[in-house]
Image: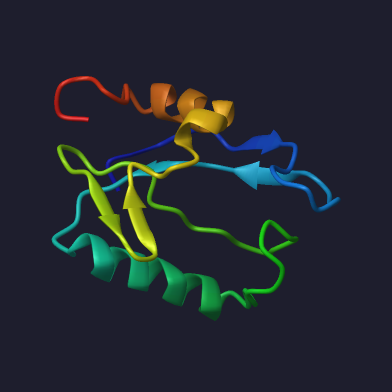
Length: 107
């Protein structure tokens, strides 16, 4: 891990009523392909007891790939930058805390 943003409590996004979330963003360097990284993140969610139910519904853990330096992807189940990035102000705050500006050279 290269850096981590502060943990931030935020209101949930989406139409399903639920309590607040704790959010944190990590800046990592990896040799994994984007698909292998996503698979690893989904594996972590599973190990921590995440059960995928209702879309946008309550969850114990949600690991997302938000940006990958110098890369854009649009594959089934994997879009980078994350398509919800423009709608999540807390992600932009967390990226700023990591010194990352989406759309800037390399990002």
